[in-house]
Length: 79
Image: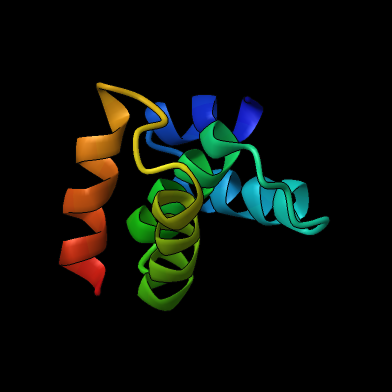
């Protein structure tokens, strides 16, 4: 949650560090995957963003009526 707050505040580098640390155990939580993927995209790590967003959409394509379309669009942008 803190990494997402940093991302929303425009502190991408700090958000990226915290997100990577939070994801190191391989969470499958759709919200975590979405946040981590979008943070990776914002930090310029397109391969990581593609992996995370792809995994998210493979396992939970309709995880959110609001964020699933945004995740698909972001994946198209980085893929």
